[in-house]
Image (cartoon, rainbow, N blue to C red; front, top):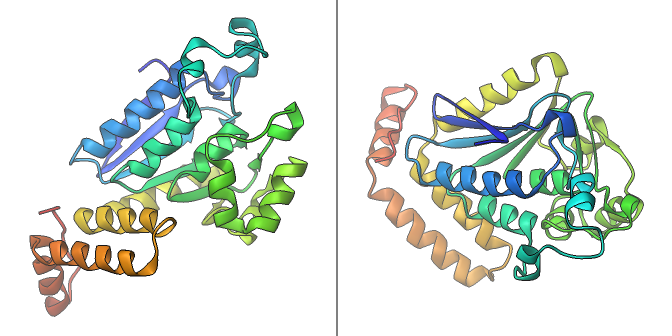
Length: 263
């Protein structure tokens, strides 16, 4: 890929956005590659967890408005966007939601606008201690996209989401963790090491059960209780048929750590 670096380690696939000269701002090519990389990771049985991070000082500065102004102009949508009801970053959000593997956003630096929306779509978010994020859009005269108005209220509540979107103010790591925007904050010096430790530990879990758990969590936001209870029952019945459950029970009886193989 042109704008993404792909690395694999112990079941964890790390996708590093690689446009550091533009703080990894999203253009058409990068957006296409993000979707492709997520879909490939979802389909690869060797991949159990996906981590998204950014090269250099930023996680993702949002849409590359400079490139867009030169290419399409601000007032006219590209032909692709005219024919697409979701847009680039909308499809990015769907690819993450529909991914059968847990996706972690490792916010190593600034995340703004569509860059923050990308992180919000992930299952888990960790933030470097000196990083900052912003909804950003309002600063440029724009309304949000990429699922921001869907994910943010579900994470921090409607009132706080409205404040963060309407003001576009900076949110630093301590506040981000306090309001539930991120799962944890790590020191910058050891940030990726800490994220990878967490991701590898998660990757050692039962992949089939993790997939069903993610599907259930996604469904829970749009499903009533009774249909969700039925979906939960169907999922756990399938889990009971796996060798991973047998291994989990044996490991418990033998007082050892289970080794899950996704079978």
